[in-house]
Image (tube, rainbow, N blue to C red; front, side):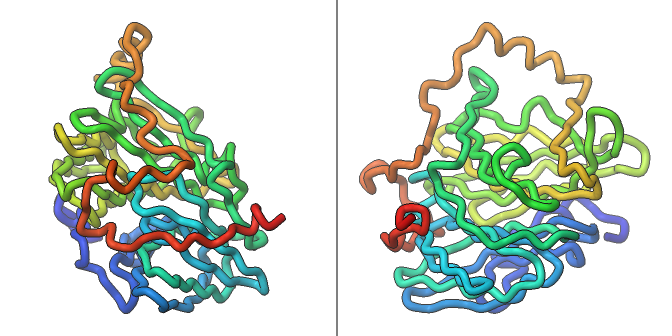
Length: 317
């Protein structure tokens, strides 16, 4: 990016749509080297075929279910009604592969990806294998679905998690960074993709972490919006009262260790010490592997598809 302003890091919903993809963020368009994200939208009874190229990729349902075909393998993904209804299963597909994603009921599917050096096998990730972690306390309470972090799922470079934040809470706090390779910190480019229930507003802050890393973002975000974080302190991610917040984090960098190591902004690191005397928000977890009843869910303009109830490969085995 040349002389970027805060707006250059905010990708509004639909602004990078391309063919069946409602969002396309690549290393080339972001001006970096490793991380990428696409969102594939399929009408009922349709599919799309694409090449992964240099990128290892995950097919993660945002709404709906799908079938993923790659390297002679077929994975039937149950999916979910929306990101606020359950923890989803997913599929991993390697670099240098041709992938077909099809959906009987239609849906929206996130494709978090990273430039990879190793070619690992295609495989299925069951929802029951996703580690659901509750972090923070009080109004900094949030839920993290660790579906592809270094401790839970094997990949070459890709790190991806989901974060759900109850209305009026703050996530990504204290603000932190991961823009240097040093002891206790890893260099990772990061994508934040947002969805907000009831089509409400949320807010994201990103700011300068040092000379040569100037950045100033304080933006309202809504469902389908994305924020790019090449460097800098980032946080908080603010859920407004009455509107639960979801975001998908996609990270990758040069470290051969695939380490997720962060450094808190020293001005706010003390906040962690206050959590010892506070309870975790009782509204958490917002989702589990059990699909919520449709009557419990708020409507969202993005969540229009219902999941295919296909039997997953793990259940067949």
